Each structure stands twice: as C-alpha cells, then as structure tokens.
Amino acid sequence: VNLLKNYKGLFDLHTSTMVKISEVLDSSEMSLLLSNNIMKRINSSSCEGKKLMGVLYGFEWKNEVIAVTFIITPGFEIFENDFQNIEAIFPSGMYPIGLFIIGDEAEDPGSMELPNHVMEHISQSLLRWTSNDVNCVVILGTDIHHDISSYAVNRNNDMKAIKHEFINLENMWNDYMLHHITGILKVSCPLRETEILKNLENLQGDVESRSVAFFLENDFFIRYTSSGDVECTTLNKEVTCEKTVQEIASYVPSNESTIINAKHKRNAMDFHHMNWRMNPVVTGSYVPDRILRCVPVINQAEEESPCLTLPIKLDCLAITHKTTTGKYLMKYLCQAVVRQLKCVSFVIKRLYAEGRKISLIKPYHFYPELCGHPLTLLYPQDLSESDLEPWRRNLHSMLCLPMDVPTVRRANEHTFDWHVDGYIKNPHMGLSSPKLNGEVALVRGDYTYHHYMQDKKDDKGWGCAYRSLQTLVSWFRFQGYTEKPIPSHKEIQESLVAMGDKPTSFIGSTQWIGSTEVSYVLDSLFGITSRILFVNSGEDMGSQGRELLHHFRTQGTPIMIGGGVLAHTILGVDFNCETGDINFLILDPHYTGEEDLPTVQNKGFCGWKNINFWDKKAHYNMCLPLRPSLL
Image (cartoon, rainbow, N blue to C red; front, side, top):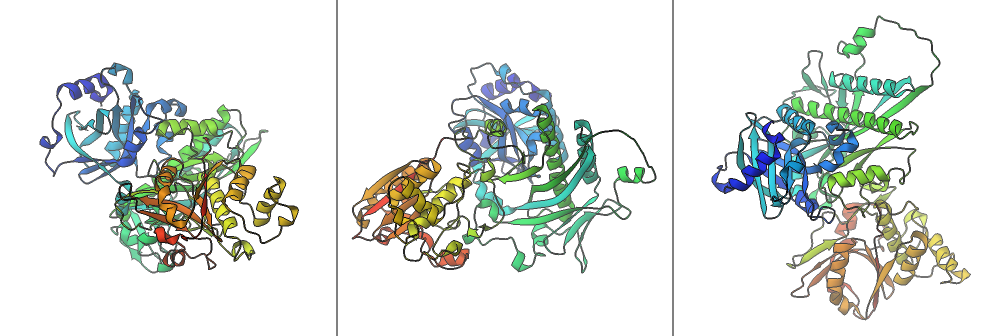
C-alpha cells in the first residue's frame, strides 16, 4: 500500500521496465479480465483526451480478477472522502479491486496522487474479500486501446506484471446470479440529524449482528443461528448451507422461476435473478446485543422536540457467482442491506447540508447501457428532477457518462417485471438477426409495445400509426426526456386539430394518420423534433440502409414508418455496406392478442424482416425522432 501511494514510482516502473506480459506469467497464474464497457466509457466523448485516474470495481474468482466498472477521482469530494457512500451504488459483491491511470506519461505523475484513504479502503476491501495474496491490481497506460499494462501488487507490496484481456460483460453474467432484496425498516426518533443518523447506524448494527433472515419467493429462507452459523431451511426440511446459489434457485417453483429463456430475455441482467424478502429477527435467543442490553432498562426523558417516523423501504441488489454456497451468500445479502442503509445516511446528511426537509427516500435501480451493470440510487420523494440535477451531474462525472443523455432520472428506472402497466417491455430483446455479415444497430433504451385493441380501444383497421406513435412516446418517457403521459387516440387527434392540421370533425373519428402527423404530435405535445425520410417504393428501402444505420448509432430512437394502409415501428437494422443487403427489426402494431411475449415473438409481430417485407407498390414515409440534449 505504501508503494502505491507514490504514483511517480509506478510510472517510473511502467516506463523503464516495460515487459512482454505473456512472458511474465503462465496460464495457471492470476489474470485480469477487463469489461469492454470500461473501454467504451473511457473512450466516450465525456472522457476523450482527459487524463483519468480512479478505482476499479469488480469481482475476484479463483485465479481471475474481473474489473467490471470504475469511478474517477474528481467525484470523491462530493462524498466527503467516504468511499462506502460511493460503492453503495453498486450491488453487493462488487468491491474495489484496484486502480488505474490512463494519460500522457510526459506530464508530472505527482499531480495524480490519490488520497491516502482511497488506497487504504482498497487494501482493506481486498484483504476482506479476496482469497489470493493480491492487495490490488493496477492498470497504467496512455491509451486504453493499445498501450496499457496491468500489474498485481501482493500483500508484501511486490508488484508483478500480469496478463489482461477484454471481455463481454453480457457473456460473463451467465455465470452470475443477481439477488433482488426488498424489505421495510423504520426509524423513529427526535427530528435531529444526529439522532436520525444514530438510529440508522443502529439498524446497520442489527443487520451486521446477523439478526435478519431472507426469504425466497416460496418457503425457502436463510438466516444465522444463535451460534452464528448459516441455516438454510424450507417449511418441510432443513437444507445444507453448502448448497450453491444455482441449487437454491431450484427451490423456486417453476411458475415463479426467474431463470429466463435466452430467446426471451429483456437484457443481460434478466438472465438469472432471485427475489428475496428481508425480515428482522426480533424473537428467540438470537437478537441484537443492543436490544438485549436494553431489555430490562426503562429510560424516561421529558423534552419538547418534533419527532420523525421514517419508513425505510429497502430495495437493494447483490451479485454472486452461481457456485457461491449458502454459507457465503448470507454475507452478500447482509452487505447489500448495510450498503443501502449507509446510502440512506448519506442522503440524510446531504438534505441537512442543503437545508431541505426530510422526506421519504426511495431506491431506484438503473441499468445504463454504457456501464453494463446495475446501479442503485436513493432519491428523496420531495425533490424534483431539476432539484436532483447536481446529484446526477456528479454521478455522470464519476462514471464517465455523457452529460447530454439522461441515464439516472427516475424515468430511467430498471424494473424486474416483463410488463409495465400492462404493456410488454422491450419485446425485441433476445431476437437474433439472420446473418448478413453486416453491422447491427438497434434502438437504445427501454420502451413498451403498443398495438391494436389495447386500453379498451377498438382501433383495429385504422389505429396502427397511433399505436406506433405511442411506442415512440414510451421510449422518450423511459429515457427521462418527458414526464408527460402517453397520449390517447383522442388526445392525438385533439393535438392535430389544435395546430390546424385537421378539421374539428377529425376528433373521435377513425381516420388514419401518417408519419408526418406523428412528427407534428411529437413536436406539439413533447417538443421533440423529427426528420422525415421518403422512398418511392418498398424496393427502395435498402437505399436508406446507411441513413438508418447512422440514426440508430447516433440517436437510438425507434422509427415510425407508414406506407400504403399500414404503419410499423422500426427498432433496428442489420446492414451490409458492401453488398447492400439489409434486414429490419420490425415491431408490428397490428397484433390483437394478449400481452404474451413468446406469442408476440414466435408469431413474428416482433422480429427481423428482409427487404421483401415492404410493399413494392407502396411509397413510404419514415419519422425519425431526434433526442433532445438533456441530463
């Protein structure tokens, strides 16, 4: 650790003793796996050309250290040098594994020294969590693409070069399980900052003293016994705590199973997750020492003071390898709860520092595409999105996220349900394009599927463009660009009449609309501008391949297309620039069935179509919505 406090020494080593990594270690020794998402974020426009230094977070498993994400040091000051407030946004199971420096070696390395508390925290975390002799890993280089070297530093402060490679996180998650933990705790105390924080600290102590139990969706639960051992139990029999997470998941009945068919997954984190409910243990021989010490004592104090009763809604995450046993799983579940309680304490401190009143604090889960892993943030319910902008800006800075794309607004919340308000969410996830050896570009972000006969509205035969418009609006809502509700058919018609595009008789009619009207409504109701593309016939759709590819690369919004008497939504393209071959990912609003994802996919209402899908005799207009610049 002392060695790592001196970055000049590290840079001297890196520049003067460069070695071929492959000659240092053989394949049986430790290697470093780096998420591709780390490279994407470092190369993003928000970080381009900057000298970066920070802390790597991830897992240690057998002989591999897996770097999943990072934070950069300019964000440390907003957390008052308290590292645990930063790592609380990550799932339990992800911990500091090392640090990195990416930048020009010619500059003064002394200017890049991390605070001592950073180094101490990394060391303590690794000593607590890792099974090998590594204190931390270090990445040094000028360019994340071509010129980086990785090192392992052991507990004797010896540094050795190690192998590294980049990996796809989505493939890695197949070996891990996401644990979703919910529960309710309560703080009741005088309305003073010190008292609130003391009560939250007591709750953390209760969890750390093992006075909680975690229940699966059925009758399986896991807890600590009075002797401190882990006990796994069902209502019928006791289960050995040596059962793995994969085996424990089998206790969930098949109709409640959260193990998703790969074809129907919604995103990488939907492959495998388990839902746990946390309950405090308040009876029996194993209760917190704090409670036992106070049982025979009655204290009475008379004072005039406002009181606070604050329900703490727990909603936290942990990630474990599927071969983790129940004995160690309990540790990760408890740590997830403790992390969230520490985050509640931080939010309370910040509210007092900003002179705001205490309100209900709600956890939100996010799954930023650039990160490739979930985040959990706590927002006071009384604060508006504009109030929270400084909070979001600091987080975007720490994580190297773009400053013009909403990522952690409330509307960006990641849910653990296939349906949102009765609508199917992201029905295209898991579908594979026929191989064209081309480039695939898809819609980026969540949306809901809107189609005929929903909302108790019989619009069969005329409402397909209305439904496509509703799907487009849902995308802008999920990305946090608007909080306005999705408009009904009548509201769409009223908007077109109000702007003078349609006569009054249009309201309540069954008349069609096209892509031009869709662009008018997006602009009028939501302030969203669009581009209109026109082709003379379905045969010419291939000529727009480069244009559509560029749209999904840069904008990522779904496209409404109308031609003849039909309207559809384009969710992506697979385009071969050399041959001109193209496939389109189509969402069809003409579906009239139940909200059943396998049916929608298997019957082709959401699927890949080739050029022959389009009518050769019809001309087509496409409405390409543009993303506003917003944080």
